[in-house]
Length: 291
Image 1 (cartoon, rainbow, N blue to C red):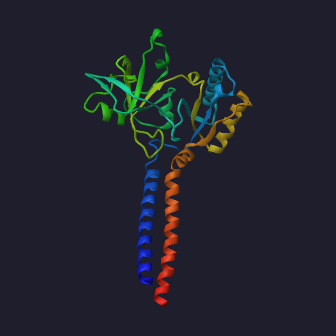
Image 2: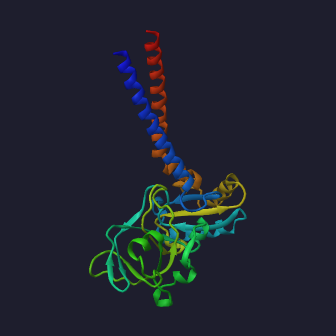
Image 3: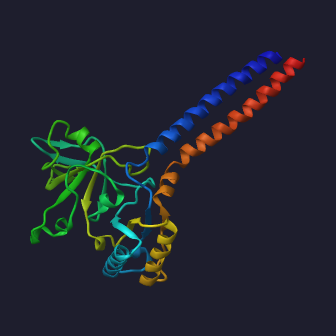
């Protein structure tokens, strides 16, 4: 009976060790792959002016002022703003209508975001084909501007495979009244949106910094140490409004780490249980040999 129990313990231990190995290998692979852009020297923070008593016009001026001062700072290499924060599980989702030689309705929602010009350059994300947003894309249509978007490689592969993505027209929604009047001007290499474990179809639209009055997520590529940049950015925020709460303030390396909390917890727990089971098996085996 003791031999049978020890044999079962050893088998259970092997299962736990294999499971721990798989979880650790998954975590290592995700860390090695990363989010598809360079996270070193990259800082992100968020503010929500409307939640803090600002009117839309006041919030617009505040975001614009903060953005201009951060870009002018000596510790800043590049800076941009996004409506939705990356790598923290949230997203703006909608089905889309695509018009090329035929009208296509996406079979699942697309992850969308609105970003300021220079966002992808700030991240260090690669444009596969076409161009990035520029200031001309912020002009209203009545002033000579045009409605444009950038999609990622996963979007092209799933819905435009075999067709040229540049010049394709898209629209948000899936109803028959949706007008696909937004022109695709570029294709972005796949980057992580909700988290590094997920690849999904994405579409991005241009927005000016003052267009993020409801909530602004700043991405700042810094020179020097992140600690010095933190102090510089905090000074800018204090000068803009000493009472303004900061929703979060961290490096992108920290955000990547946070987005992998589940995998890290599973790897740690399975490793701990595997170690405990191994110790119990050794004790059992010692007992059988002594007997």
